[in-house]
Image 1 (cartoon, rainbow, N blue to C red):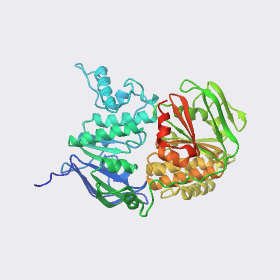
Image 2: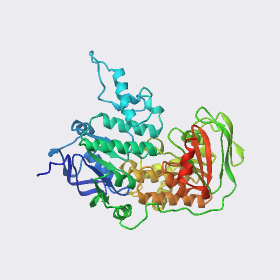
Image 3: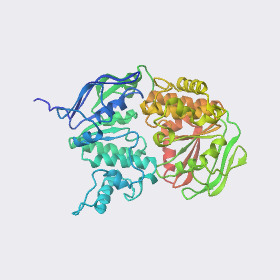
Amino acid sequence: MTQAAPLLEVKNLSKTFPGVLALNDVSFDLHAGEVHSLIGENGAGKSTLLSCINGLQKPTSGKIYVDGRLTDFNSPVDAIGQRLSMVHQELVLCPNLTVAENIFLGREPTGPAGLKDTIRLERDARDLLAQLRVPIDPARKLGRLSLNEQQVVEICRALAADPKVIVLDEPTASLNDDQVEHLLGIIHDLRERGLGIVYVSHRLNEVLDISDRITVLRDGQVVATETAKGVDQAHLVSLMVGRERKPGENVYARRDLGEIVLDAQQIGNSHFQDVSFSLHKGEILGIAGLLGCQREAVVRSLFGAQRIDDGKLIVHGKEQHFRSPHDAIDNGIAFMAADRKQEGLVLNMTVADNISLTMLDRLTSFGFLKRSSVLEMTQNMIDLLAIKVGSATQRISQLSGGNQQKVVIGKWIARKCDIIIAEDPTRGVDVGAKYEIWRAIQSLAEEGRAVILLTTELEEMMAACDRIIVMGRGRITGTFQRDEFSAEDIAHRFFV
């Protein structure tokens, strides 16, 4: 029996940017009822391949077929027209529109007079959100949601297009364990309905659980396509990085902690109440919790992005009342935002421009930027963090997501702040780059800087931290020293 033509087929695809060969003769196919995963280190070419498939970029050479027909996508609209939907790693939503309007943007239901049917719009959006078991009001403005909640909306938006092929680029990066499990269940259901799913994730346990086949990219080329059954994580990692490395490699090193550099005394506002903790010089302090626990609100108040209405904040021995992030930076506090696209980078500027943004007061003379100093500092950060970039003057938008994340980290390392808040620093980052980022954070602590760490990966938090605070419903529900770490015990405090 002859097998049906693939739903999606890429043949000998190449893509060249100025000075960079991003894809080199890549071939890949996807069949109905199949989950075919793409994995590789940041800079391997995954994002470029997905952009070509989705019509965001034109390949330099090669061909793309959908249902056996040669296609020439000029935009994502063309891809959607052939029932190919994509969930982007970097969110592409409209913060000034409601959740329902974002989910059905361009496909809004209308009534008899041709006017938008808001009741049906919100009802249909509520049904999709219910599939992910997330209680988000479809009438709420998207800009008022957390990054985690916005990721759920992005997934619903892709499902709303009734696709035959759905491309999921790091769809679980901002989801908690329950939501991940439910999303993987939805993917199983979609596969049973005959959809083809391209799945991209750095969480190799998910990849092995959900995939039928796995294709590994390295340096813009396909190095292997494997059947998922019988393959283990160690083998995939060796294919990705070209050398053996354990996925959970521990970079923790015990340190003698110094004096208290930050002391939160019963601080609170409309989002959280009675939060008290101290942070020591040389310490990595994790704050764990589920979606909605308000840990993000706590760290943003420490950075001056939200008001503290109650309690006291003591920084370096002095009580502070930050009116803005600028005040926090002046007092030696850095903030590495999880949403690098909206809060961490200026995408139309160069790598050097982005890294120097936090240092302009120290890199100018008589009002003029010392360009040689900027380039020297940028090159130091490129070398330190192993950022894959053509040159310091390359636009940040041309880098992979993981290398963009390294730039976010580099600009704050260069500032040499005493207190660093790192919000999901390895979000959307491959196993090789994760090790480099965790090693960089450990090095900061070894130098005597204090780090507050938020991450959706509890195992990674336990591998990196000296102490973990757990939050639930806007309050601290538990504190664990390193010798007390237990995933089960910590997770139990999520629900107190």
